[in-house]
Every structure is written in structure tokens, then in C-alpha cells.
Image (cartoon, rainbow, N blue to C red; front, side, top):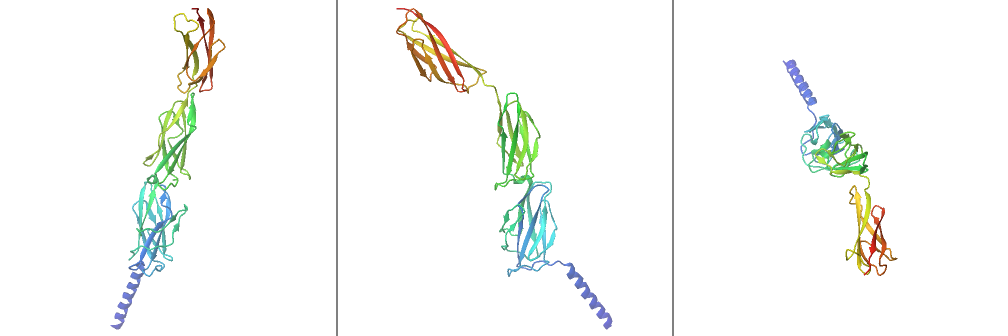
Length: 334
């Protein structure tokens, strides 16, 4: 009988020992846990290290081998369960193909209030301090992090016969950080793009080229954000300017001693409003002259009855061109 009882007791001890071996060690009640990520942003398909720091209520690190359980609502973590060393347990967050904000959660036994471990410095150079939401860290995945898309064209115009410009889109997050590995979509109202999409580099920049012979409006978009419109203009050849000069007197037959009015006009073909007259030098054919900024002036001849006078005006234009126009008048006698 005694032998049978001894056998039963030994079996029970073995069963208890096996059960203890299979139950993971977790943090005791009153422990505190804080979670942090090496990077708060990863591109789709990217990874980052996630660390949990666990201490007992006394402030000392939990026993080595304490199991911390990790979970996420986006992507996945590996391993799901990790054991502590000096209070730290680590896992790897792996983003999937979907953009969004992942909540990575860590838990272990009786963890509760926040503690303050040393900050974790990630591979991207950022330092991640502890947060009041101690057991959850947010990681933004892919295009969900985009705050600003800036677009530039170089050069900003093409010749009238057409040409190619470089389009550069710069993508940043809300904190101004450049975002790498994001797809930027380009669109143009005219011409042909070398590609409708490009992926941002380490500086958060994506590049394509535009070939066009017409003025084009270009945009770039990443995630839910779009750049302001950029206009690439076509440089038309400068218009050809010509000038004419007309004269009018007080009577059908102008007399010396009367006032003559002279008017210069400038014609640009094809029309170009950027070409304007800025200075007029008048020579009246009797040795007198005047300079004005007006296309019209007047003059009185005091001598030269029954004679002709050639009047000349020299016109300076905003494009650097100088025009000369002449007209002839015949002075009658009283």
C-alpha cells in the first residue's frame, strides 16, 4: 500500500513540475511597462525594432526571462512573445502592404502604471522617450505619414519649339522629416511625362521629366496629399515691333506759327504686352528737340513758310529695341 501511495505522490510531483515548466514567467502584479519603437515611421513592407521595458513595483527590472506579449492592429510582429534581459524585451514590427497607423501593444502579467526607462535611439537617429500611454506605441506606415508634397520644375519654361524640364517632388511628414520609399504620382495637363510615378529616395525626393511644346500645369501627389500646381510656360519668340508717326495741325493747311501735334504709335506682331515704349526723343526738323515719356507732343514753328520739315522720333522699348519713325510736314504761309 505504501509503495502505491509513494508512486502516486511522485507522479503528482512530476505533473506539477511539467506544468510549471510550460507556464511562462510574467511580470508580477504592480509592475510597470513602457514600449518604444526605433522609428515612428516605416514604408510599406518596412521593419523597425520595438522594445518593451518592464520593472517591478520596487523599480528594479523584472526577472530575466519574463515573457512580454506583443500585438498589432496593422502588419505583424515577430516574435509575438519575447523574454526580457535586464528588463528589456524586443520584437520586430513588420509593415505589410497597407498604409495606416499601427498600434503596437505590449503586455506582461500584472503590468500597469507608466515608468521612465532610458530613451531608445533608433536606426533613423531619432530618440524615442517613454509616453503616458505606456503599453502602446504608434507607428505610421507608408503614405499615411505624408503631410506635405512640394513640387518644383527646372527650368520653369520651354522654348516655343518644345523642350524638357525636370520635375522634383519632395515629400515630408508633419515634423518635417523626409519620407523615403513612398510612391509619388505626377500629372501634367500637356506634354509627356517620362513616368507617371516615382519613388522617394533617402531625401524624400522623387524625380521625373516632362517634355512639352505647350504651356503645362503639373501636380504631384503622395498618399492623400497633393502639391500646389506648378506651371511650365512656353517661351514664344519676341514680337516684332514697328512704329509710325503722324502729325496734325490747327487747319487743313498747316501754317507756321501754329501748334502742330505729333503722335507716335508702336505695333507689336505677334502681340506682346511685355513690350512697351518707355522713352521718346523728338527732333522737329528746325533744330529743336525734346525728350518725353509720352507718345504725343506738340511744337510751334516760328519760321519756314512755304517749306517742308522732316520730324523724327526715336523710341526706346522695354525689350531693349530702339525704333525710329519719321513724318514730313509742309508749312504754309499766312
